[in-house]
Image 1 (tube, rainbow, N blue to C red):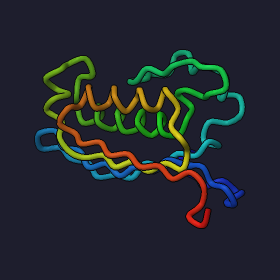
Image 2 (spheres, rainbow, N blue to C red; image 1 turned 90 degrees about the vertical axis):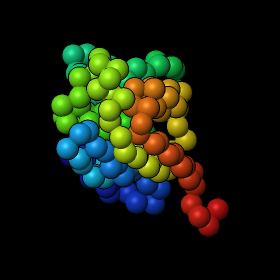
Image 3 (tube, rainbow, N blue to C red; image 1 turned 120 degrees about the vertical axis):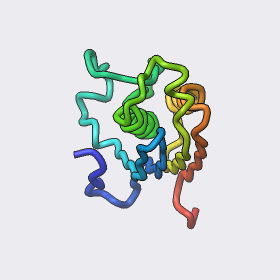
Length: 140
């Protein structure tokens, strides 16, 4: 299941986000966590096909695009925002969403993840997005 910690904790790669989002009288405050193992080995090189997506990923050799943890967390947050009743193609609805999203990742973001952050900021201009990464351990 998504958000389940991998068995090998010696070098855990993950992305975690805290999101507090409001649309009119509806609000959610939730944590989102994704690990590479959430996708399974078959997904790493295959597109989801018919799965509903909100953000556009770049297909690049050696990268996992929409299956990178940061990209997946942003997709999860978009899905939760749209569950509030936001029409994804309505500029007015998306601009009415307010709040904040703080993301931490132990993985260097790929081009798809950086692009997803820009897409998120463009789609939800009144939601503050902060991103921090730490690659390696604190003792390095």
